[in-house]
Length: 146
Image (cartoon, rainbow, N blue to C red; front, side, top):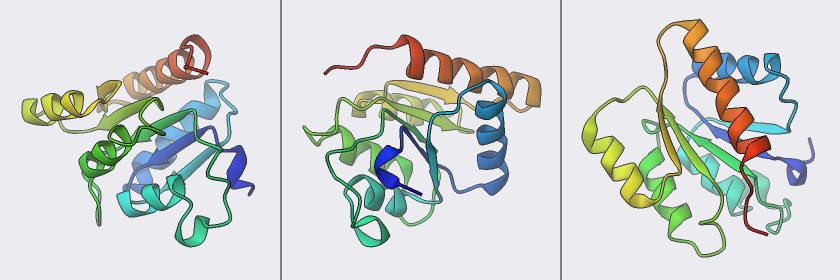
């Protein structure tokens, strides 16, 4: 896979949730190049071109980051904080896609600069629709800075 062509970086430790999200995006017609990482450390390695991603061009940034909060090694909150404090990366939209409805999590994410906070719906129809709308809005409708 050419890591420089990735448009969506998806950080999710649950393989079941990841597969469901990826399937919903594809079924919705979004064929954007998506790369799935399994924890926050791997997400930061991807973004900063470290470790197994050292050969990736650091100038090629994802257009969207889908980020789970509760991940091993480095949490989604820590990843969000790092991204939004970096002047070169803070304009990348970060959508929190998590199962946590806890108000402190929601408030903390927005205070750190999250662009959206979406609680994963429990039933598959609502989940499919939520993922379709995420893809439609962030990949087609939203205009990023140049």
